[in-house]
Amino acid sequence: MNSRLLLLLVFCAVSQRVHAQGELPLKSGDRITISIGAIPDNEVVQINKVYTISDNGTINLLHIGEVRASGLKPSALQRSIEQIYVSREIYARPNVLVSIDTDQTARQVYVTGVNKPGPVPYRPGMTLSQAIQFAGGPTPFASMKRVRLVRGARVTEHNLSRDIGNPAVDVTLQPEDQINLPE
Image 1 (tube, rainbow, N blue to C red):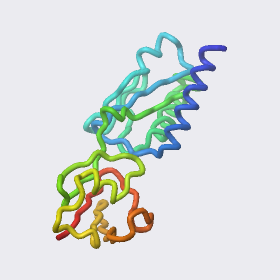
Image 2 (image 1 turned 45 degrees about the vertical axis):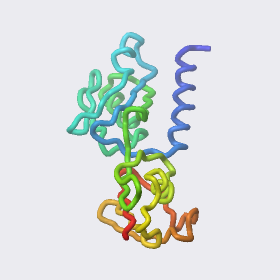
Image 3 (image 1 turned 180 degrees about the horizontal axis):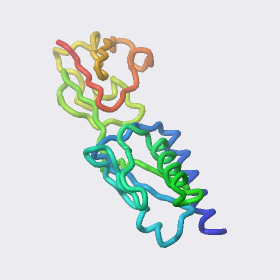
């Protein structure tokens, strides 16, 4: 089998797995791996590597310079890089794969009113009750009837005293969510 065809098949399989897990927007400080196929072999080593998104939200790529990455999901960054290379007539049909280095890119939720208050590592699919349990469970004085979820400027209240597991109440979290169990 042609090595480029094999590389393309691997890209597709990994890309589908990333989409199935759900994508998070990239942010400054995230470490991402970029792999590009269908380009000259002598340039693969120069481009295919791990990048850290800069404080200004960009990465620096061969031939095209700075590319905005912060705020984009990996699939959107893939399309953006492909479009830039094609529109500038650098590569005819590059196949770009962007993946987040999850070992080095920490996403967190913050929990108070629990036995171990503070940040909890975010995991895709994590719910309110799971984050509370990862933080050591509620303190003896905390109320599971009025759990507050702060997401950006929006605050919602959830009764987890009897509805754990109900997706309408025990909602799925997003990175940087704040959870408070009041006394």
